[in-house]
Length: 180
Image (cartoon, rainbow, N blue to C red; front, side):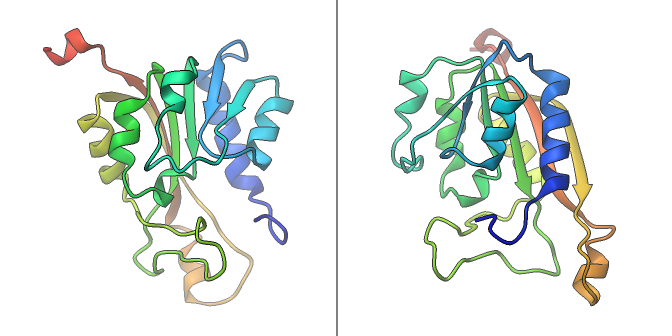
C-alpha cells in the first residue's frame, strides 16, 4: 500500500497525539493487520497487538477475546460498513480513531484492484463525533490537519488549507453516567 508514498506527516501527527494520552505500559489493540504505523508504535515502545484480517463488520469476537486498555483504529472506520456495531462491542476504556475527512472537491476513494482498499464512509468531523456519542463514548481530545501535496492544480491548492485528517481520543462513558 505504501510502495510509492509514505504518509510521514500523518504518522508524525498520529504518534504525537497517541503519546500525549497513552503510556507505553498500556496494552493496545490496533484494528487492522500489522502495518507500517503499528510497527512504528512498537518501535516507540508501545505494547501493540493487531487484529488478524478478520472482517470486523461480520466478526467482532476479537473484542471478547482480547483484553486491552486501548483500542486504536487509524484509517480503518472509513472502510467499514457498520462502525456503529464495532464501537458498541469494544470493551476497552480508551479509544483512538483517525479518519480521512470527506473532501467536497474529491470523490470517495475506491481501489479498482483491492476490494479491501475502498471507502464506504467519507466522514465529516461531526459525523464521527455523533457516532461516538451514540455508541457510549466521550471525546476527550481531537485534532485536525491538512495534507498538502507537491503538485500543481486546483485540488492540490485546496489541500493546502482544507483539513484532510481528523483524530479523536475518546473514553467509554460508564453505564451509571449514561443513566442506565
